[in-house]
Length: 95
Image 1 (tube, helix red, strand yellow):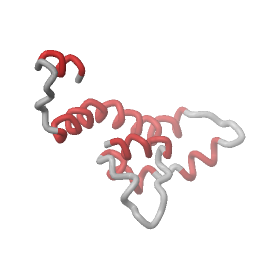
Image 2 (tube, rainbow, N blue to C red; image 1 turned 45 degrees about the vertical axis):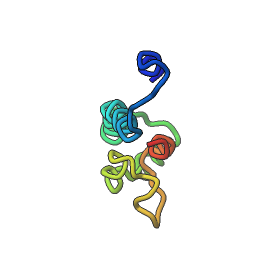
Image 3 (cartoon, rainbow, N blue to C red; image 1 turned 90 degrees about the vertical axis):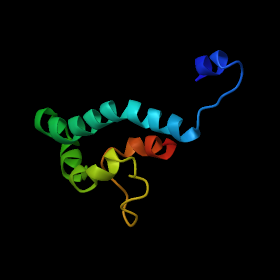
Image 4 (cartoon, one colour; image 1 turned 120 degrees about the horizontal axis):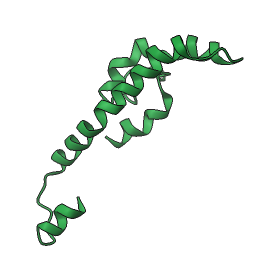
């Protein structure tokens, strides 16, 4: 953004929706792969530590996967908190 700002002579003519869309598209592939990895790969190849059973039983990605991918996990489902990668609340908030 700073390079664009400098190239335009100190004016920034990009609409905000283009900036948000470009950011969402840039994050999407890694975010999708991270959710898929934590949902499908970690339970299979994960571990057998003393608290691993809690992750296996309570991650809840099967119920809220689509809302995670659409960056709507803070809004939908409204009545319950999403347990699928709780750390990603900020990314959904940011976008």
